[in-house]
Structures are given as C-alpha cells and as structure tokens.
Image: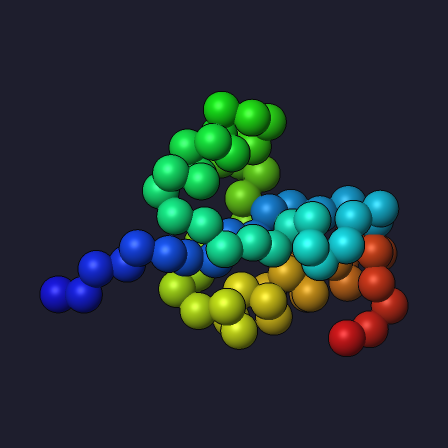
Length: 71
C-alpha cells in the first residue's frame, strides 16, 4: 500500500477567478487550515494524486464558469 502525503485540490471557480485561485497542492495540515478558513467541502470539485489530472479538471471548470475561453 502506498501512502499519499501530498495531493492536488481543485475548488469551484467563478468567472472572476484564475487557475492559481482554484488549483493548489496540499497536505493534511494545509487542508486543515483551508477548512478553518473559508473552504467548505461543497466548494471542492476534487482531490487528485497527480497535478496533471488536477490541472486539466481545473481548466475545464474555469472554461465552464466562463473565466477562460480556451486552454
């Protein structure tokens, strides 16, 4: 069994956000801080083990939200 210590998070965008706003690498400690801030589980699109997959999902979410026209 492999242990996942870092992962990628994609949150729900709106049309005024950029990739850096909705796509970040985290560990359990950082997620704890995010939840103590204003992040809620309903605001998360997904948690991924690879950055490439997460980035693709984040860009699709930005496209759907109207924040970008293409990628």
